[in-house]
Every structure is written in C-alpha cells, then in structure tokens.
Amino acid sequence: MKLVVQIPCLNEEETLPLVFARMPQEIPGIDQIEYLVIDDGCTDGTVEVARRLGVRHFVHHTRNMGLGQSFQDGALKALEMGADILVNTDGDNQYPSERIADLVGPILHGMADIVVADRQTHQIEDFSPVKKKLQKMGSRVVNLAASTELPDAASGFRAYSRESLIRLNLVTKFSYCMETIIQAGNKRMKITSIPIDTNAKTRESRLFRSTREHVFKSAATILRAYVMYRPLVFFASLGTLLLLLGLVPYVRFLVITASGHGAGAGRHIQSLLAGGVLVLGALITYSLGVIADLIRINRILVEDGLVQQKRLRYEAPASAPEPATAPARP
Ligand SMILES: Nc1nc2c(ncn2[C@@H]2O[C@H](COP(=O)(O)OP(=O)(O)O)[C@@H](O)[C@H]2O)c(=O)[nH]1
Ligand SMILES: [Mg+2]
Image: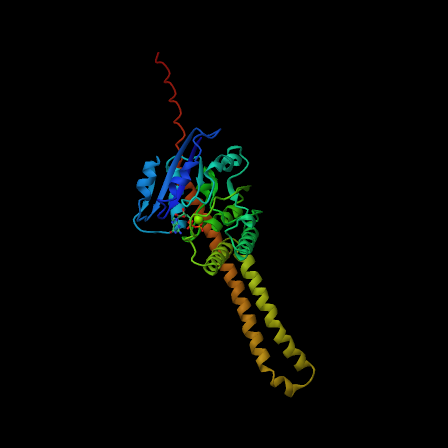
C-alpha cells in the first residue's frame, strides 16, 4: 500500500520545513510513503528546501497556474507514481501533518473513498465571526448540491483513494475543493470527515484577497458545479419561478377584462406585456434545462471514456496468463 503526500506550493520556503517537522515516517497498513511537491511557479527557494527535506518527486509549473490546476497535475502524477492513497496538505503549515495517519484510516479500512479533515472552523481564533458564518453557509450549500453531510467543505487537508482519483475529472482552475465534493457526491462516492485542530496561522491566505472575493468565487464555483450535475432541477426551478411571476400580471389582466370594464382593460396592456415577457422567459429557461441535461448526459459518456483511459494508463496490466504447455508430441 503506497501513500503519496502531495503539497502544492507557491513560495513556501519558510513554512515547508514546519510541514515536514511532524510528518509521519510510518503508518500502520502503509508500506511506503512518498512526498510530492507541486512547484506552482515558485520564485523563491521552495524547490531546494523541499529537496533538502527529502522530497524526490516534483511537478513543475514554469509560471503560476493556480491551486486547482496544481491539484489536478499532482493527482495525475500520484497515479503515475502508483499511489494507492493520496493525501493533500498545504505548504503554509495550516494543517497538522501528524494527523495524516488518522486521515487515511477510513480509506485503509474500506470505509471511505475520500476523507475531508474538519477544521472545526467555529473554534479557529484567526477566523472573524463573518468568515465563520460564511464557511458554515458555504458547506451547507455544497452539502445540498452533493447530498453529503460534511462540516467543512472548504478544507484542503484530505485523503483520496486511488479509485476516487481515477473517477474524478475536475474542470475548475480556481478552486478544486468544492468541485471535488460536489462531483464525488454526485458520483456516489463515500466521503467522510475527521475533526482536526489547525496549526497557528503563519500568513494570510493568498487564495483570496478579501472575504468578498472569497464569497463571490466560491458561489460561482458551487453554482457552476450544481448546474453541471443537476441542470434540470436548476433550470426547472428558475423557469417555474418566471412562469409564476408571469402569470400574476396575466391573471390580473384577465380579471380586469372579464369584469366587463372593457375600456379599463385597454389601459392594462403593460400587464399583458410584462406577463408575456416573463412567460416567454420561463419557456426559454425550460428549453435551456433540456439542452443542459443533454449536455450532462454527453459529459457522462465522455467521462466514462476518460476513466477507461486512466485505467489503461495508470493501472498495472493484469499479469499475462501462463502459456499453456504444448502437448508432448508422440
Ligand atoms: N494562493 C495560492 N496558493 C497556491 C497556488 N498554487 C499553489 N498554492 C498552494 O496552495 C496552498 C493553499 O494556499 P493558501 O494561500 O494557504 O490558501 P488557504 O487555503 O486559503 O489558506 C498553499 O500550500 C499554497 O502554496 C496559487 O496559485 N495561489
Ligand atoms: Mg493557508
């Protein structure tokens, strides 16, 4: 059983030694632990520091490509390295490396495909009350879209089984955290969570410059993932809302006309127009839902092909059957 611990890094020379200081050397049930650093266009000494710390495997980006792309490239490299389990942790020492053994436990015991560490954000002193609320709300929306019950959907400290890496196909470049959960949930993978305490903050998050940017980008990612997996629910809800809104002025117009005030009805032509536009909007939205659902079906077929390709590429071919011994000639 091989474990690959992956650390995506954007200029982490100062904190990387802290990440390795408590890295487990042995884990029961794991025969081999390897480390993989994703150099996401680092301009400091991250790579040299990592080499000194004993890292032998790297993915290099000549320029910064973002955390989402870094995760995806690292996951493919881990498959190439023959990882049975991949653990992702951050280079800023936010997560407790010494808990990796607990993180991989549910996968080792066949109880989960993905394990997400719960940072218990309500307890983190560095998080403002607004940030705590937003984290909770974000997790709730992700859980709704993924049919999961995870307390901390934005945590980057996770373990993935080899099978889950083969089946996940990510498309967002910005943040993979939410997308992996929504996709894994919709693909009926088993995702569990273990509580952890995070380490003291070493620096500000570089992923988001402000809370507003964080909320906006996360909401966009969740919405896109939701539309991708449940287009009919999304467009049918929106269409029905428009239809109901459109019926209000229509009904008003009909009531006025039916009540016999013919001259009055002529003055309510705006209601007819507003109703017409909204009902038309509803019909267009329903049609978009049908098209999006057809695209979803197409995506499933494309993904099936991708999964087969990954299996052929990364899974060791089953050993060839022994050649049958030729019958002895008389
Ligand atoms: N901010 C940022 N982090 C990156 C990028 N590529 C890789 N990383 C690494 O991703 C991890 C998380 O980044 P961080 O700024 O700590 O974001 P946080 O998860 O909000 O605390 C760190 O190990 C970074 O070094 C990138 O393009 N931007
Ligand atoms: Mg961080």
